[in-house]
Length: 130
Image (cartoon, rainbow, N blue to C red; front, side, top):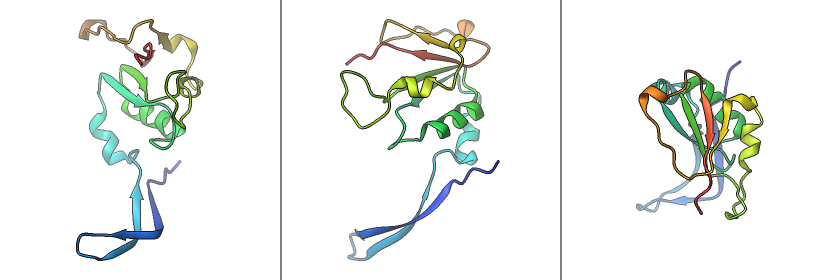
């Protein structure tokens, strides 16, 4: 399966730079391009933008997690009862993972030591602090 990572676009009104030049066309590149993911392999803890667009689509985030293979994933930037943004709740991200790989903590903090890191990727949902 090939993942498209670059998309051409045309701005409806354009952008005027400091020299007065109008720019309307460009190429947007996804943060899931392999040359950007490869250096992250071996990361112990990944803070994941789990609310979907406008940051990263949830399926793309799942692919990134699989490619990076962190020991712990901490979802962040998702819809809660206290935050009113047009983003998805954390359960939409968690739906792709088996229950035994998910831990929910009743704290906004996590104490991690190298010797206690899990062997397989674990998703750790912290209590939202705000």
